[in-house]
Length: 70
Image (cartoon, rainbow, N blue to C red; front, side):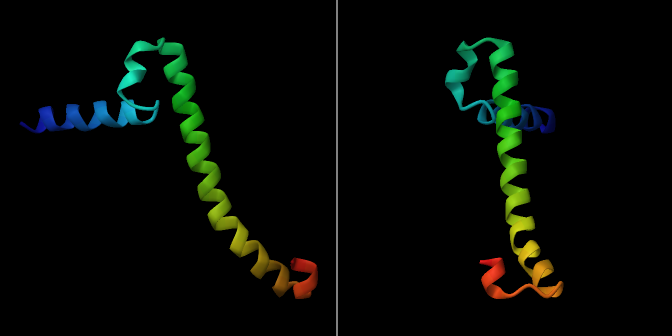
């Protein structure tokens, strides 16, 4: 039972990272490239969400004016 659920979750995550069920028809190399593209986007969005606000606070702590930050 657990192994069946685990397989279902793993298969759906694998397909979601390449764009959906249509991805079964494309080559393995293209699927691998789409997975790396998806991971790059996720990491980029996460870094932008963390670093952007913290960078403004860091510049304020160094003495920058709001005009310089903006």
